[in-house]
Length: 72
Image 1 (tube, one colour):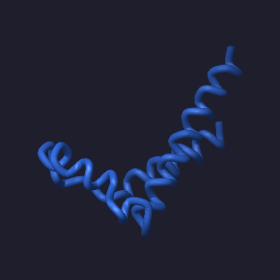
Image 2 (tube, rainbow, N blue to C red):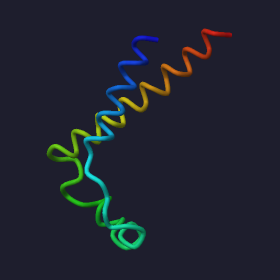
Image 3 (cartoon, one colour):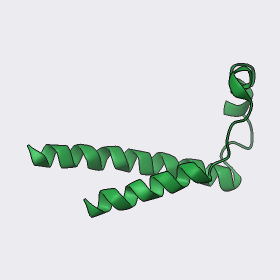
Image 4 (spheres, rainbow, N blue to C red):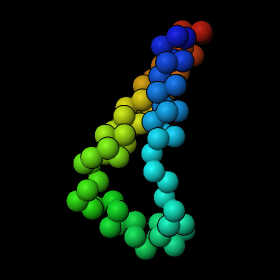
């Protein structure tokens, strides 16, 4: 339970520290491919933060499922 709480805090912090997408709905439809396949996607602070968010989200899901399985 303690590990799940720590992972949850890291997940919350990594999501809150990311930049918002202020383009709205039209920007996500028109510029989605450019942003997805852009050259700067995995570099810099935002790229590292994105990877940390993905890893902590996967850890959160795995730990949550493990705790549910242990409870049965």
